[in-house]
Figure 1 (tube, one colour):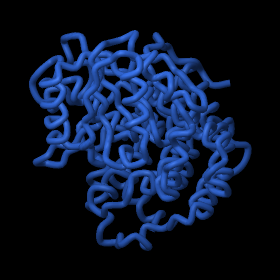
Figure 2: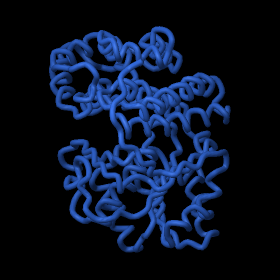
Figure 3: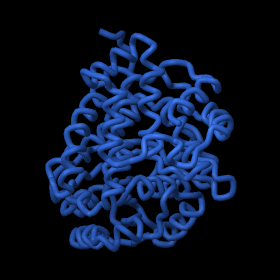
Figure 4: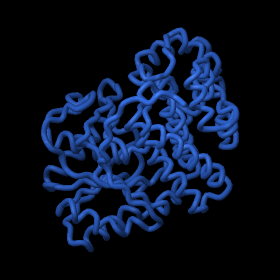
Length: 372
């Protein structure tokens, strides 16, 4: 058994799970406000999910406003646009409906609406000094687990730096998990978000901040995600498997909140920034190499074995292949000449310091070379 670390855990987010659970939105929202702004994107509107949410809210007697201009990888401009609408509407409740981008935009908006200033003022942890509006988070993808996290990841519109802005007051009051909402995901989104969620489960299991609470969520999320992923690849309409994926992603998000991430995410962010490789693909591709790197230490090796009784690195590589995702950086336009700049940027990433094994710039270069 591994040593137990100290922890201080207070559940902040009520989790409501079930097929068709979206119908309960109005009932749940009425407990927290009267003027609800729904934050989402055009794709969710097109799929009909936003209208269903608005109808539930109106039926419960709430005044509603729709902000549907969320973009992938939201920027400070996206947040500013959302704040302008929320301020004019005088929202007293925010609802993030969609993938991580919608939920992050809603959280970012919440910081500025309630505490003023700019997003950069909240870069870091615990910098909001005033109470924040209640938030209901409704994921339509099984990936980021943002619904169970207190962080908003927002890019600076000018510098493109990704700012992780975290505060316990930003955590959702309710995470509403309806597997039926994930059926409409395109195949590629299903694959990439699923790989991302699996990476979260694996990485949170071994970080320096892991503890008894995070470990429970890491292991259960991995069990659910592995059980659902291949089934969803075979049959996208398998609602039970979709439920496994959605709940697994939420549990992985909870694990992140109690543990943190590590070197695979540090490797992934430069690949996204420099080559436009989608985050889920980037982190999944780097994950086997980081597993092997960390397995040189006894405790991470044991934790990996607790997740999967076999070669976990090979298992992740097989998942990438089954999802028909390229498994080599060379297939994605990366060359040997790019490794130096990638490694230098990876070494500056915040998550690197939580990796169980210290990672130097030279180590990052070695990891990228292994992934070529």
